[in-house]
Image (tube, rainbow over all chains, first blue to last red; front, top):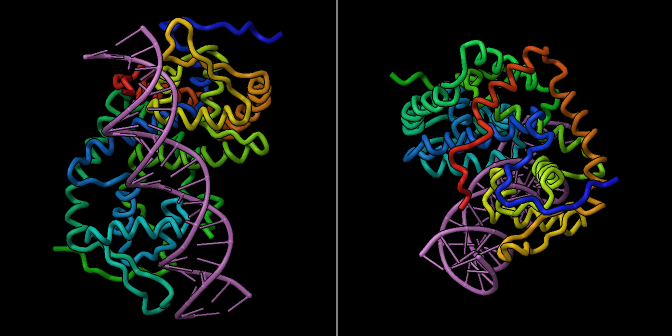
Length: 161
Length: 161
DNA sequence: TATTGTTATACTCTATAACTATA
DNA sequence: TATAGTTATAGAGTATAACAATA
């Protein structure tokens, strides 16, 4: 039998059904909250989490090719183009042809990009501290371990055609 | 001194810098992986995580108003409109004016929507099992606890103007 | 006056497919 | 033939602001 269809009282508390039991659901909500807090903590620097990831990767791997950047960010190579365009337009990033393989672009941070990154890093760490403020050391470790298991560093589907 | 700008060897392993230490980064990657697996496991039923959340909420709270649905999903009320339109077009959901407050819509699953939800639920549970397959019982509990702390059930910013 | 749903609009993110230049 | 970057395009997702109906 289908349950009787009846209007709930408007001020009834909402029943989340099976959702709170789903790790996928909780992770999605956490991600939304984290994204908002990240953006809010950037203020004038105005960097999204993905842009920040791109800057960090370019700092750690000077001359990285676009395709490798795309793979590291879990993006299609076509999606990296507008991302880099925005960063280049802000003067944070430079693309130059690789001599060894002139199909490829080597990516570098500009001096300005490096400066911005140094300015942004402590804000990201603050943001991170805020995130895990309510977590015990053990919880934090368990969270890191669990997420690493759900998403291993080396993915299977690393093609990004 | 800025570090010397030099081209990395193309086949060098990528250095992820500080990223792996950031919970925010790991959660983002996990979310991407989860979203892809969720969509893949839906096959013909073709429901996104958000749509699934909406269906579950409407089943558990028959007659829920759009605004309450928006809040529960962490969306703006305007963002719920296209979401519901798609579900209504597929005949899964019905909107009707509330008698007590004729500004509000009461949302219900149709018989078809209920049927689809029952069909989709086990797939979501499979997906969920796949996610946490590599996690120990303790890790799973710790993950749930940590995420619940990062994103408490009752949020502060529950206005959704 | 305030609230609910809606519309118009815009912006971001992402992917697919086709193009180009190189290899 | 295959690969790297690009372009054109399209779709989803989201938000802001303004509007109509209702409270």
